[in-house]
Image 1 (cartoon, helix red, strand yellow):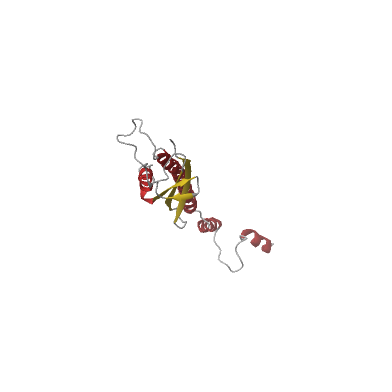
Image 2: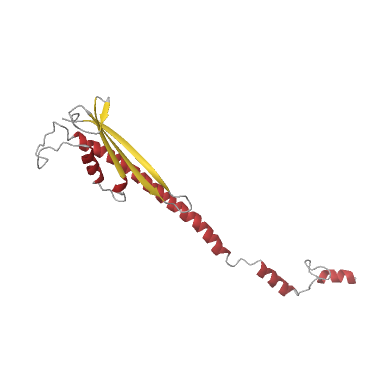
Length: 183
């Protein structure tokens, strides 16, 4: 009977010859050792890093998409600028002087002057070329700047990307537009 009585009093986690603590102190000690104080802060810190990286990545990709849209629009605008300023253009009262004949540097100046917000115009490279029937391309407008000839404008943009925990890189975006010189 005595052996049965001892087994009922002794807690299950105490061994023979081990330290015996009254029940209240043992559970308080175990609760302290297994405490979860501060774990919420650690979990928040880890999840915040992942969440903020994801948010900055999405913002970076939105900026890249915006920049690509700008590059495509800039190439179309540069081509339009070149086709309406051919050798036989007339002012129709739209210019203060005679119709200025365009060249590659004038197209580049025009495209860089479009100035979309968030776009660094010094990272733009604009190339304009003129062709007769699309056979040979020349970077000079004369003498191929007549109605019916082709104008091709290529715009390239270097976009620096910086996303946390991702190596920094530079995205190169390019768009080409080709149109026929108008009367």
